[in-house]
Image (cartoon, rainbow, N blue to C red; front, side, top):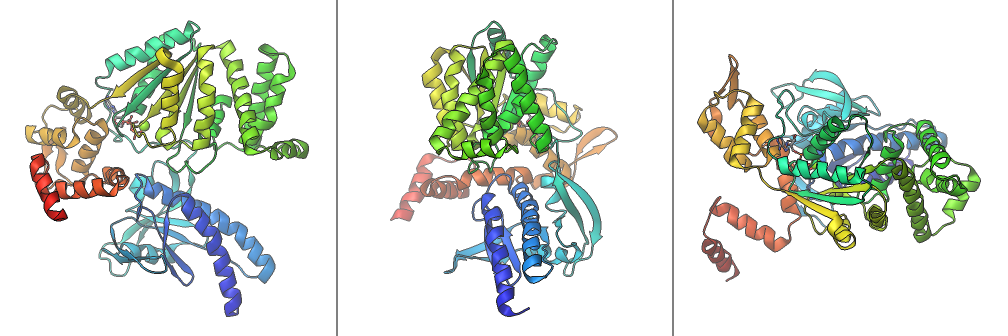
Length: 529
Ligand SMILES: Nc1ncnc2c1ncn2[C@@H]1O[C@H](COP(=O)(O)OP(=O)(O)OP(=O)(O)O)[C@@H](O)[C@H]1O
Ligand SMILES: [Mg+2]
């Protein structure tokens, strides 16, 4: 192949790959001939970078497969890529003039990723055992066994990533350790009261806020279980829409998720299944609630949102609309659907992780919210208290529009007694040394997620070990680090702070965990001078 053809093929591929990488907010760190070094987590940290990297890798293979067809037709050449992912610390230098990042690999993190590619078949994704624990609940894998790597004393276990799991697990919780929900009784009670109001025909909304890991999602799960137990006849419809952490740039992402939940098929379902489910729900509702042709009018727009294969005439009609009119049509259609359902049974509509929601979904939901004034529907807004996100607009709107019909629940840290209870529940035995117990409590500061992660870390590092059914302190209890799963979460939060606040935090962290404000002031003042 001549140089020109070669670069045309490579550049064409990189153009397409870059779009995938940017969608998940990765960074192209370096181009090395026919290799591409990509970072997730630098310079911008997200709490789920390993998951983003893996999603990007799978998408990238799909893009490459399409591209390979093109290249085969044009040049009669087989085009293929491999993607290898490793996780670890990398030191990044200043941005060089061509906008690529200079980096110094620490402990061979980047090298290892480059080495394991020799074990990869073309058009596959491999991950190392350093990446695997972060992503294992979300994808299907084949364990490829151990491989020897030059420069490494220990062989490395690698896994091939096949596809996302249809029913993904959760990064939360310790497998094998379960605690019933501690505390939160009054919150749960007020949620159940809201269900009663909705069953009595009233429209309501509830806002649940709290820091990451404070137990918003857990509270919802317990609420659902309690509600089902109280009313096994299932007279209310429970529908959940989730926002994705990388979904802010995907138009109507939350609405599309919600719509899948309303028609009752998972997002991973195929087109035919989704299509049938939508049509049968529309038919069902028109027969019962509204015999007019009005519901038929919603099909093109809901179908479009769900990317269904529809007749050309219908698609042309939808595509001819400007974005504003299209949004109005989406709103009208969704409202009809929801009115249809709530005419038959009260509807509980959970909007999860609104801090990640995309702006177009939020605009639409703000306009949908007023129906709570007239029909038995309960909007449940779940979000971290991040006021500069598009999702927070829905919170503001709910406060303005709904007034007294809006209940606010703010989840605060667990009390010391509750945290103690949680630790005992998780580790089951009372024999845990007091020193270990107070260390866990001190490090987790009443955040249930932190409690779990500190325990996970202590077990992983051998700082607590199980012996004859009792948990005892191991040897290295003195050395406590930040748990792996919290590392990203905390860094991502620090990353989002304004520069001056970040600097203050940096200085404060050097002084120590607690300090008189005047010391901080003095140090910062001296720096200015
Ligand atoms: N009151 C509680 N008692 C026992 N375990 C809890 C409690 N609250 C939360 N947990 C556990 O702590 C972990 C974190 O909770 P959860 O995922 O609900 O937090 P969250 O507020 O939804 O966080 P995020 O903002 O990241 O979504 C979960 O494993 C959950 O089961
Ligand atoms: Mg949650």
